[in-house]
Image (cartoon, rainbow, N blue to C red; front, side):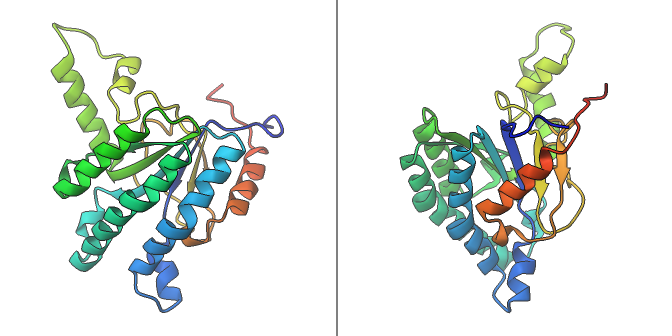
Length: 232
């Protein structure tokens, strides 16, 4: 059993169920995304920082999400623009460091430039590091890491696990002890393929727009009961 009240360094979240939450309430699909952006993320990040979590990762947009209906994708892009300008600025003012994993080159130029700006702006903040996975896929990350290593390597240098880890998007970020997927689906869908080797997994059946801070506390209590052997 875990040591009681042990604080995790890194909690990662697959934000699933936004569309199902909206449909169940007869709302436009984008309302689920909007609710998470405007009402869920900031309180959740603040609560995580308050209880001592150092890193929190949110998978907000996958490499496969481009295949959704054009109207939804366009709406999400507009939501990103507003969130970066307003919500992420609030996080900056509260001392939150923001990092992004994923290949942001596919985003519209203004969004990519805004992302780079906020990463630079918040790089010295200490309260908590919040990582947003944007145009992220685990296989895509691994392929890009291999290409980057191959470009950087010299002669016949052997690729080691440490070298590979340092070429991933998450370089410098500890692997998550806990990965949560909201919405009840029990799969990772390629999320943090390399980093999740010994992560504990939880699949609550409630949706991301329902992820209030008290639910995080409930999941952490469940985590305390887990026995982590790391293959030993």
